[in-house]
Length: 76
Image 1: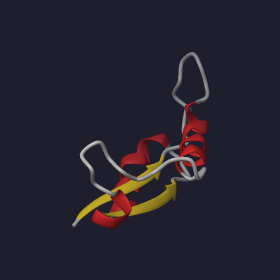
Image 2 (image 1 turned 30 degrees about the vertical axis):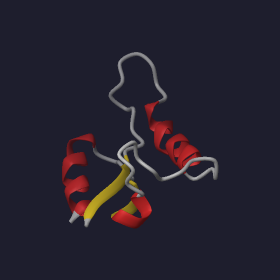
Image 3 (image 1 turned 90 degrees about the vertical axis):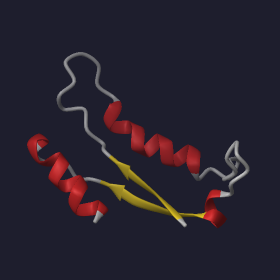
Image 4 (image 1 turned 120 degrees about the vertical axis):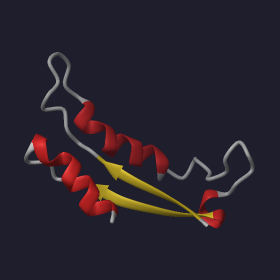
């Protein structure tokens, strides 16, 4: 069985121009869980039946230089 992990990184603190990327995880989840989508891939795999899917939530990012460490901690 394969694993898929969803982890949101709501951060746009290093953006030099447009802000807004920090809102992406919220919007992705709104569309993923809105009831009108399905979990079938183009290859005919039902993600919920054939793959272990885990939503790991969003990281609370306080230090840009520690994001990689935070990701590793959550994904272990």
